[in-house]
Length: 282
Image (cartoon, rainbow, N blue to C red; front, side, top):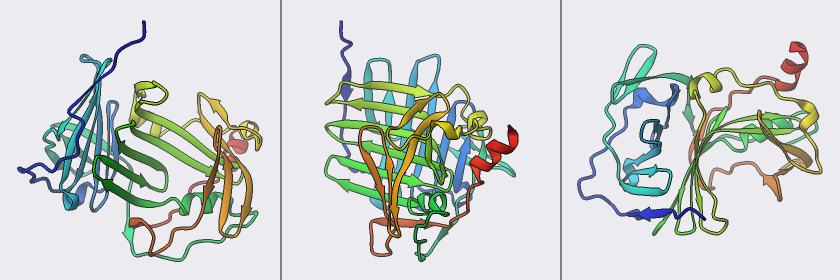
């Protein structure tokens, strides 16, 4: 028998009692075993799970847009309502959320728009990383799509009548392509029937000790699903365009523009040469 999934209170209404603010000292990516938080100057997304209740939840706060909401996934129900209160305190080397400590995974430095690289055969990894950096927000009626792409991680909070897709992932780039490793995935797709509420056993341990990239898994003719991530392989490039094989479709990347849809620009901090590191370890 197909499991019936119930969706309750699916709306993006403005709350009259809205009063959320962001603590600027909490900016960055933070995690512990069961939770993860990303905060920029204008957006906060907090993911957590309750193993005893078998729930996963994500809270989105955007003070400038008067958005303050929590989405909860249970085994058979999605609950969407006003955000659960978040009491965030900042310590010397950690933050606490409602009394639970989270430790820094990555810092975020927000800067003014800057010139982007042009792609060539030797800098594909840097271009893939730089061209995706920043915060993007689209809110239109009952459609909400927030993307936060840092130098090492990627976050999405999307709610629409057709799909709820909320996730956190490590995203590493090489000249052969990118490796996408989700550690949190909350998905309800009305078209395909997919219903997933997954979280890695220990978010902090995973994000601070990522598995090696296996160069042999990059294949320009197809993507590769593996325990260590999804391999999106390099297909082609031009100075202002890179194409990867994105599992059933091609993913195309272009440089960011100052007059584009990016609301926050992040400083580019190059990732390690993941392929070189893997060859040294072997």
